[in-house]
Length: 514
Image (cartoon, rainbow, N blue to C red; front, side, top):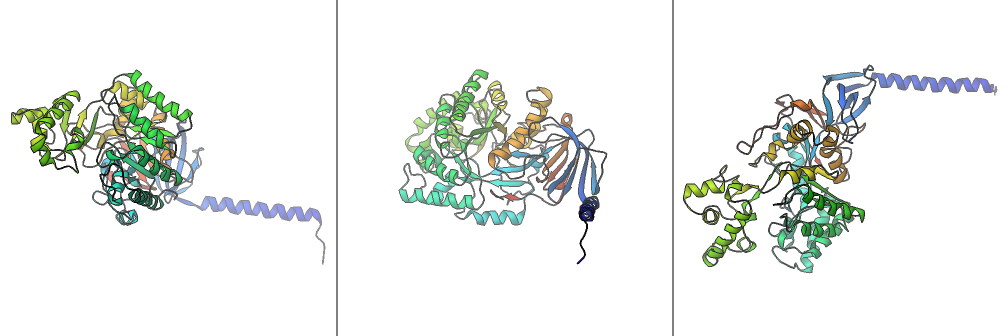
């Protein structure tokens, strides 16, 4: 066999490597991407300064970010993004709605939200096997991505614990089992609603046991805490921080009802900072409005709510209930500060209804509405305090809204952050605001390959000029779609272009660990 000279060997190897490189380069040049977003200013969701680049999409993902904008690859569709910001789609950490009934979720898409977190305030779909519900949502395919949580109140009802103050060991074990199954099905954690029945009956021991299950499954405990009033909020936070010894915890829609000023906000934030210094992972979300929104039952005493018989309460404790409601509403800034959001009196304040009926406002609540007859907006918060909370680096943005809710936060929250707090008040730089609405929530919840503009990440994207973003919703007309987002893409597909919405839905039910 003839020997090959070493020099010839080197030439052959070099030729082979060169041929491979040329073939690779030709293959790369032959790729035709689905979409080119050309000459965008990228605010990538990390909080870093924006930069200009061309972004190429393939399938549902970001395939290439080309900072040399003079290099153009073959694409099926091109979007001219010159002068526009390209950001990740926003992630709503606390939302409501039923993807089986209103899968289009246009209110969220209009304000740039591409992922919502459902199962909030302790309530999730009433299925022992949550996989059944998950499969149904996948068949419907919602317009936005859904990250599902399992609700503690629902677990209590499904487990047999119900309204028990101290559940039996068997029922506690059943709750733990149901929670484990839900998380194995893909839920991102547990939510609690400790201001609602039956959750308000739960003690710290029960909550800590469930937090251990969440922690073991690498999830998150989100909590509508026991009491958000100024006199009780710190105690409620401490109760949650106890659960933080076993699992990361998250304060839902952080607020201080009746509290006022930056100094009060600073004390709340210091409490959370101190917990972090001890190794507890704690975050929060907030909506940028001075009125909360929830069931009218929040105004009624525990003994006038389920499982108690309300008609019997009216017969036997009427005078006591009259005084309770009078005092509570007076403390909550009076009947003018309660705006009814559902039912026959929707759009009227409690004061207006009382005047129309010529009867005391507490009797309107007792006899005409009842503890489950409506939901309402409650003007009980201080803007200066809430804005100080919003500015904190561990606080992200949520709507706590739904397509049907009679509150502007459902249709305006994310637009208001940009319009009011970035453009007008300049409370937040755009990069920080985008991080609070994308990268931070994705990291907190554990969403894989979402929340950032990065090669290989899912293409949930927004294109807009910040000066054009407008919150259109008001308390009088809350269901007005936000304006200004030029393009909204969900999983690599354009679902909103100017005022036109795609007829096909491109969202997914996300599963933890996917």
